[in-house]
Image (cartoon, rainbow, N blue to C red):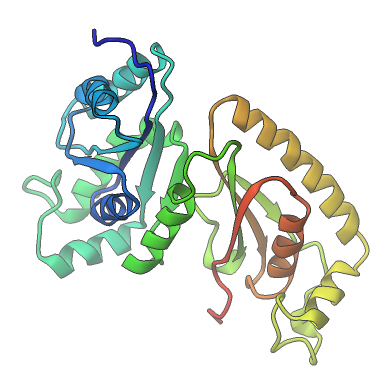
Length: 288
């Protein structure tokens, strides 16, 4: 067992589906000044921590994947070993839909690392099964299906570009249910109980970022009460997440198309959470 760590560097473990953007995430962390080790066997995480401590590195990141066949067990054991020393690494899980992953592998003309003699889809299914337990315990889940390289880099900068500020980082995302639930959401709020501005001719072409739509949505019966109640729930949840060491929380706010109600409510919800490190994105705005 290594020596006790006297100054704990920030530690990030990046894992997830092959083809979901681990290399891009690694380069993003390097751009931010992190020391990044690719394809590190999970069992070597405590050793990497010792080396980082001796070198005085402020932040280290390990990219781990299924090339270690005992991946899930080894990673859980390594994290438990770090926890016993008072260290809580942040685990980032990168995800993407099956069709997107297949297309990415076809574009680069490479086999999936777990497909063997089968199809790319067979490899994806095997990898999903192996990663199931790790995904359930991750701190940050990022769905890269609709993200390009620059957008994934921006997302990594949002999470890890602000140093070691106390408290959870909260990412509020509006979305449209007709485009699917965000798989990386920790909490989901549904705004479809409010009247839809889409059916108001003078509001249809506008979005929730525009004053007339914002006033219409927030002025509906139940809107203020919903915001009061949900902001209170979030304050309780965020305090609990922080106590449990979860630093990154994604709150998704949805309506039918992700253009009017969810956008207005997400923007107002962010203003109701003073003192928190908040970023906002509107996933489906402009998609129609």
